[in-house]
Amino acid sequence: SGKVGKALQDEVRDRASRSVDLSISLEPLPDPNNRLTLSSTRKDKHGLACPDIHYDVGDYVRKGLEVVKTQLRQIGDLFDAQEFVINDKLNANNHIMGGTIMGSDPTNSVVNGNCRAHDHDNLWIPGGGAMVSASVVNTTLTMAALGLKAANDVLRALERK
Image 1: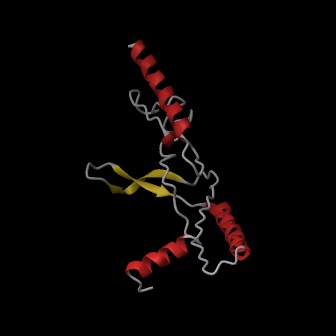
Image 2: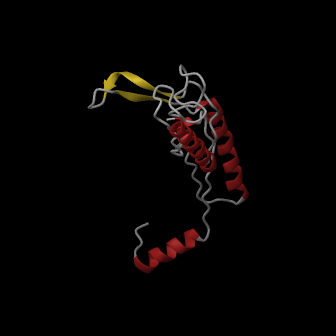
Image 3: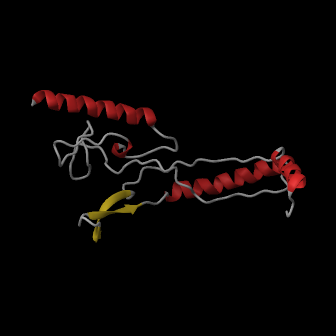
C-alpha cells in the first residue's frame, strides 16, 4: 500500500483486528501406488540406487478440496468478507511415514511387527516409516510405541546371544 511508519502500523492493526485465516486439513486415503521404490536409473555417490517417490493425493482429496472451497466461500459470504482469498495449493504435512512399511511378508514390506528389517537381522527401523498410512496429524504416541516395541526386541535378541 506504500505506507510507512505510523500509517503502516495503523493499517496492520486495522487489518489484523478484522482478519481470519483458516487452515483446512484433508486426509488422503491409503493407496498402494503411493510408495518408495529403488531407482533403476539413478545411483548415489556410493553406487546405491536412489529412491523414487511415487505419490498422488488421489481423487478423494481433490474432490474434498472442491467441497471445502465452496464451504469457505459460504463462510466468507456469511461474514460479508471484503477481501477473500482461497489458496487451493495442497501442502504436505511432511510426516516422514511409510518408507519402511511393516508387514510379515518380505516381498511387500521392509520390517516385521517389531520394526526389525526382513533383510538384515541386526537392523531395527522403528518409527513412522513402518506405518502404511498416515493421518493429517503426527502419530507421535504410536511412533513412540513402535520405538519401545523395537527396543524390547533388541533386548530379547541380545539376551539370546
